[in-house]
Picture 1: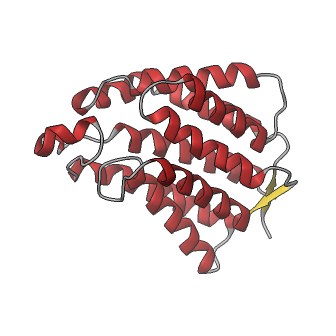
Picture 2: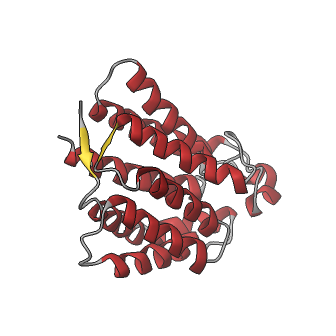
Length: 213
């Protein structure tokens, strides 16, 4: 059965921070069309601060996710800090103490993160939020493993579903948050949270896939 080591997995979180920082201007640009325009700036700030604390630390994946979650929850403004903060701390708690992470543990981790977000936010699929990326991604992963696909194949299915979920927000009217005040004018624009969530999930999955043994 395929699995990857928790030890050294902190490098995945460092790569995640690089991807978010690379996309800072893009995320703020799309956020600016229907939101505050600060999504990329806030995310890059938070991920950058976490990366500084993790550099050279040889952290486990669980330890690095906990560091990232804590920074986002306590030091970043806006609506996304607490949402992503609780997601990452729930991820961390689920796999803490595990030597290796298999597909079942990865699924439990994803579900815990989603439950954390849902405990503080009311968004559902179709509301034009990060939930439109996260929920289909988790469902695709679970469907793949239930069908007997390998961990690697399930990770690929997750990424494809996350990107399709992100793209689905183009055709949605925002029902939650600042963008909801625009009504129909929020059509035709990607949701920034759904977009950053797709980046995060893709980087997490690529990192896990590269370490499978």
